[in-house]
Image 1 (cartoon, rainbow, N blue to C red):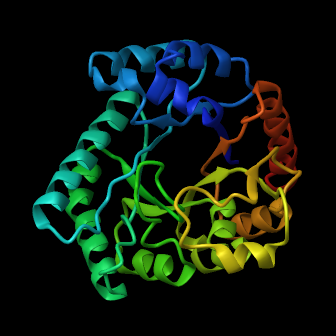
Image 2 (image 1 turned 45 degrees about the vertical axis):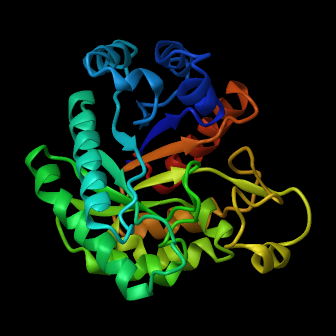
Image 3 (image 1 turned 30 degrees about the horizontal axis):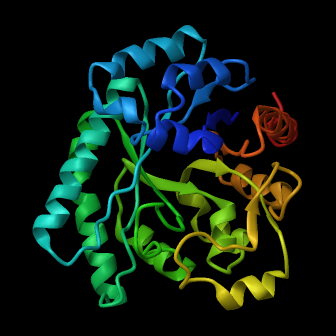
Length: 295
């Protein structure tokens, strides 16, 4: 049966930029949620001090939870080899972080969709960089998970592998037991594409999932498709919302995942309107999981 984790979507600036929330305060807030884990983020300000890593693991475990997965954003599509080497070194540092925290999954990305890159060049740069990290991950029993991502907050360009065909080409280019997909249905809408179509193409490689929901603040899906791809920052007309009340079809998603034997972690990226919203999303997902993975 899949297990649930929570991610501090509503508190990222407080934890990573402003320092107005401590990691311990987030752990205390999240300890009240009916989930088994907390997805971590490499960019929490306090994670810069490595002596905090075992302390935070203990705090989470003392709260009866674990840290299953790490969210981080390597940029592997830069044309300069020295730049890519630095990103590979960063990724290995995040793998060490994941290992110290007791986690099993560490995210990778492709990198930025730089305008000078061809499709084949970008896929090769990203795949070669991921392969460079895989032996290090395997030694520490960590699985690298690639997400169908939209855009890191601090990047100039969207994700190179944002589009379904590019993402699938990159996934197919990396064949390793310590590599899999972190599926995020909401990000597919940001690419102007169908999340169920993508899932059916990669479901046999999915090992973790981000659960979220999006709703249109204005206009239609067709309007969104016309304007996607080139915008700096996130699409204005699409908003994060409570899970089960947005565009995602969780019955279709869980039907497909169950058919492929999925039983991994589902991390909730929600709660932008407060912890009560996050708790309702937890309840929605628990009920759906009980239907598709009955004990």
